[in-house]
Image (spheres, helix red, strand yellow):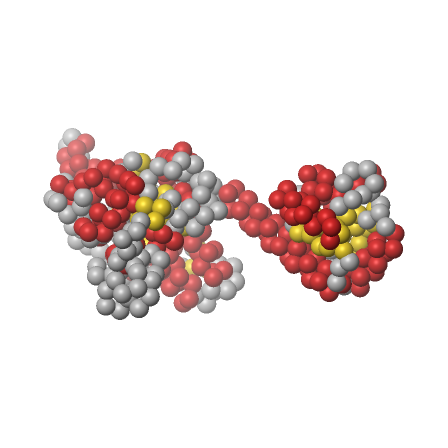
Length: 451
């Protein structure tokens, strides 16, 4: 099962350990000293090292500094304090002589399992960081590269971050990336959707309460803010936070302390705040619906996520990433997207952003019986329209016009029967450029209220 190195200078104990571990399927290798072992093998070649603390020459604890392989220290009862010190230096564990055989085997198995999990996690993390460098977020367009760069710069700090973007753009993914790349990554990440908690309960949920603080408070409860102590607190849809809760949150950020509902004593907390919203907090502040002092406290660093309709170059890559993720979760075989499906996704406006795309792909995966997802399986309006009857010919557009007038007349003449992708291709521009020109000329898409 595993290659083990036994560093023990007493031959009787060494042979007994060899037989015991071999009976349990392992392959033990023996050495009387650390110098002998280093001369014969690379210490990194083993899955686990069991080293006596007192060896001829170098002490067994020196192996801890020489390899990434987990090391279990073997010691006499009199040397247990030294073994504990070895744990602090990085030893996986220690066992006191004379040791119980069953206890030793269990310790070896547990340490090997933990080592395997650590290697798997490291390999998975390396894979994710290689393919999706920032927290698994997919995107190569310029706007997303700016998001990645800002995450890299602000993540290692304790600065408060405000993430802006429409619903479904992946704001929680950005919050997780900020946490994972921070000095607090070993602490908790507590995510709270402020819009999902009833207004009458949100203060108790966030800040906790003492027994009897209000009707139904049958016991004391730790709040979510306190639970994030030493880590990151992510408040999604912070614009929905009631005014009184805003005041309590401001005190946490300014003073680093929290007071549970019904308590007269304050508790120290150490959190890093990451907030997100799709609303205009500055406008809410001007209208008196959001505390201005809290707004300026949380808006130290701003990260703005673009909607999917402004990320046309990323849509094929994002769609394939979500397809692979979905088919693995649903335990389906290999699936691909047809070119027609990609074209339909490029033509769609994605008002629900990444969340809508993920739901669309999941529905198609469930319905698919073949290995290819077609445009019809996606159920998008653009795909259904292209499969229907041909539209009536649009009126001709005069060619003796200025570029701006030609753009206006072309769009107005064709937008009722052409997709945005087809319009952009007809004009020889990108969908993003088409969208920007619509905004500049005040020509909304038919049925759109975004202007």
